[in-house]
Length: 151
Image (cartoon, rainbow, N blue to C red; front, side, top):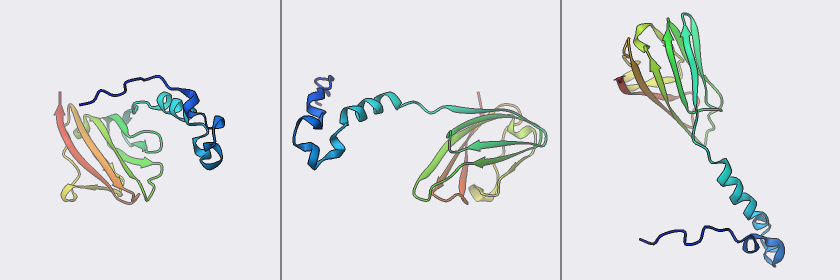
């Protein structure tokens, strides 16, 4: 295996298209150094949207435009839904941590689809992990119960 990179210093003279004839033919290379520097500083880990405790008759709304990881605690019969866009050319996926999910009834948005058409049987006291994915269709969001009574 070759160790990469040998030299991690960016030579701006090699990336600056102003100083050579590439500028006219390849204007997209003009600010390559800025692009690389920007990519380094904007690459961040996903953040979790903590929706808190959802009380009786409350609604937990997962905003897919801002997060792909969510967590909440069930405090009474509630509704789980989503907001945001699901572009037809993109996969939207994520994960949900539900605490005490089986302690009350959860009504799911009709666009959520389950294995064998049945909502997951969540634990009444503890943590369950649910995964979701949509293949570019805002009318079909598959939910999978991937962890029950997690410690």
